[in-house]
Length: 407
Ligand code: HEM
Image 1: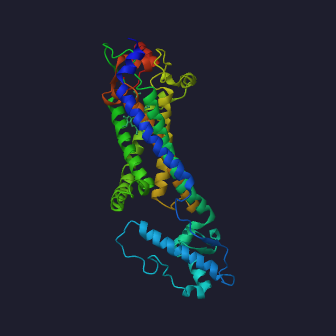
Image 2: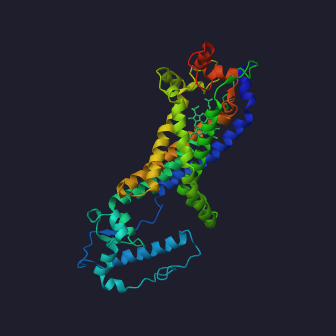
Image 3: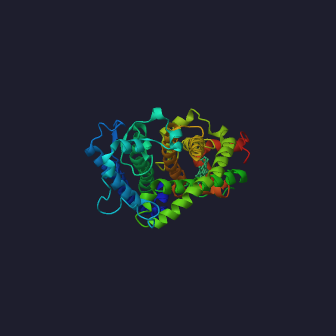
């Protein structure tokens, strides 16, 4: 029986699972694409720019609109806040608008009070950065976050980054599931070898890998709760969202030191072997030989270009995540409000990209490729696997050249 036929027959179960996963993921992706364009992600507060503080031109209609919206938002906030058992805000909760009309009699005081920051907020938003107006946001000085730049940023986070992030993660998982369904698992073409296994990673390398991997997975899952908890958990239980959200916020900070340390040690151990080479282009052009069962996969040293991509994503992406993450832990210590906003957006965007990339890495290291997992678990690999995927590395080993500390 040909090797290709053998591999096709051996992994039918994986292909069926891949097909089912692909259908489910396609449905989730369609939902996210719909959500991206439906424009109902958050209540947009009414903000009227440029209303003078002396109140001369403050129209009752305009202020009335802002107040009505403010009442709606206050109710929304109460409905969706983390503590549903808390007392309802006294003046602004219920089906009717209970807000009193009295403040409208003295619009100047009202507008002035909303526009004036308290001491802490004043430090963040220096007067020259502020725009005077009326905001419908129902908490003190929240209107500071409705400045034009901050508004763009909020739309960036809520609409673009959140939904495109979900589409990136789900879409990439969909492609992997489709690949599993259509192509099946990448087999060891010549089957398991009788020759001695080949040592691939030493104990230190494996310990560092798994410390970094566990840290990353905790950071990714807790980050997903922070970014998507409202969509994924709240519909089932708001109490659960409160508890899981609280735990996630803490765990997200507790696991960053081990992640940062792991990435640093990986950089020291593996940078030299991950430098780009001209032959990487050939490997990439041929898709690593992963898409056919032909017996001539493109040659690679210890790390092929796909693995180099994983390595550099971990090192450079990790560096950006740690840098922006520490910045978010110490708000306003070295960045102003504009800088903090960029730090948060960068953290979110690079975070979802890394999650998508590492879903691909975990796929290929487990179900995607026969024999790969053992390289990082027991530390050695089947001889045929090594020859099929890393010809040049095996050749170097045989010639005793370019030994790594693991060998
Ligand atoms: C359950 C999760 C994971 C599994 C099963 C897994 C599996 C593996 C395997 C089998 C290898 C060795 C591949 C080879 O023989 O060359 C490997 C390498 C590597 N892993 Fe992971 N890994 C996981 C998570 C992670 C995470 C979260 C990171 C980083 C944040 C990471 C970073 C790396 C790097 C940089 C390498 C070396 C380059 C490469 O081979 O791609 N891994 N992993």
